[in-house]
Length: 82
Picture 1 (spheres, helix red, strand yellow):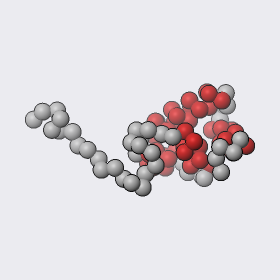
Picture 2 (tube, helix red, strand yellow):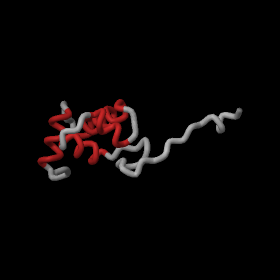
Picture 3 (cartoon, rainbow, N blue to C red):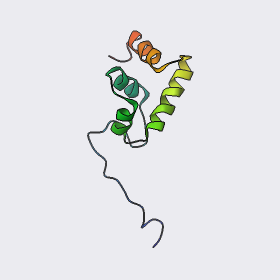
């Protein structure tokens, strides 16, 4: 059996947000602002929770913000999320 024959493809769930293995930063922060957990956000995107954590860390580094709750507050104050 060749390597390509053993690959299992997942059907894309049209209820999910974004593309597989791609996390929209604003979408992540919006879901956190809505009270979702990191695990829940990861399930929506179809990625591992560590992928979402890395995306959050990169945003925090970009805006020089220490905590995720401060990041959410920053996005809310600037009107980037509801």
